[in-house]
Amino acid sequence: MEISIVINNYKTRGLLKQCLNGIFANPPSVDFEIIVVDNNSGDGSVELIREKFAPDYPVREIGAPAGEVEKVFSGFAGGNNQADGLFQGIKLIASEENLGHQRGNNLGIKHSSGKYILILNTDIAIMDQGIDKLYQFMEQQPQVALVGPRLKNPDGSIQFSCLRFPSAWVPIYRRTALGKLPFAKREIDKYLMTDFNHSETRPVDWILGSCELVRRSAIDQVGLMDEELFMYFGDVAWCKKFFQAGYSVYYFPETDIVHYHKRESAESGMFSKIFWIHIFDWIRYLKKYT
Image 1 (cartoon, rainbow, N blue to C red):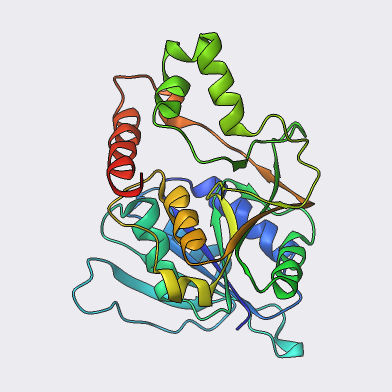
Image 2: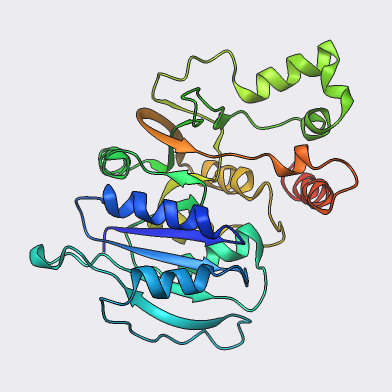
């Protein structure tokens, strides 16, 4: 297996359907599998996989690892390219609880077999042969552990998806009124790499974890994503680990992928649960990685 596509889902049934349709409309030319981890969404996401993507194809039941909290309901489903010997299917893992970003993706990786792991959020829409282009780049760059594509907003504008490592106050600036002050704006612009025109393939500090292709041999060396971080900063920490192991992280703008990005922790306000999950993950990150 060349590519394992891991999609971690929580209460985003519509986006999950769109994401999967995009992959099957623009599939990689190499053999691949799709692993969907559902975090007890309760919104019909599991039923969507079974009813829309599974009925016409064989399903193989798989068991959960001993001691794990998740319960695996169904295994592989799919496969519209059997003629040339490639298996293209979906492995569905239905967890009994919300595992968060890191644990959920790690669970998908544990059940994968690809040479490369493509981490995808459900709000990613594959529009062209982007997966193939990322794969070909990694095949030519053995020193690269992780590569991320240029991401665009639905209106065509470019997202800041390659970033510099944040200073201690950047997350606070971005989520409070302090971010309007001139010195804070300069710090945020530096963090977001607004000085970069985003049309150049180049090494960067880290890539937004919503869409990234990762080399399995690099994961084997540094380990899975840090599960002490529930939802945020796991992508930053992972890239730091790759650097420490002697690998590079790259931004690759030669493909455009749409990201229906919503900054929940910033938009929900200081009194929301998601805001404080972000802050506590930031504190854990600072203690461990700075």
